[in-house]
Length: 124
Image (cartoon, rainbow, N blue to C red; front, side):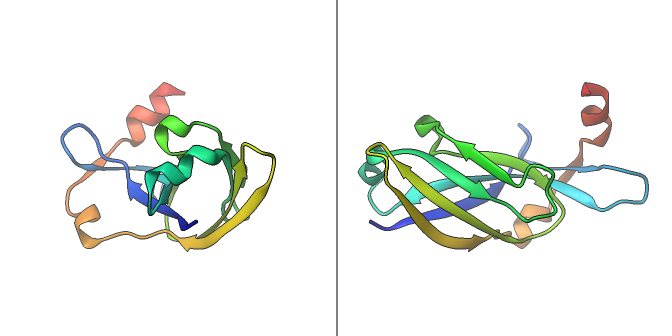
């Protein structure tokens, strides 16, 4: 089975890449989505969930998704690329490592940006 992770930056409805600055003078943090992909989408049917391990500096570095409807995706805010490790959790109770994945971005991702810092801060 050829399982792999993929990612994209999350954009607003106008197609602009969202970012926020968490503290004055801080770096731009981009909203990222990561999900499980397979050569044949039917390969995902045997999977019940995915355990993700983000960079150790994340407050919640270990995440899990059991949502097959969105390809077991997770989202988070980050200022840079790093390696993500993951394990597929099969419905029969077995588990398998997925090849480690480094976040990928293209120059186009940063061509049209929208600062959502204020909106995020007002929301809570």
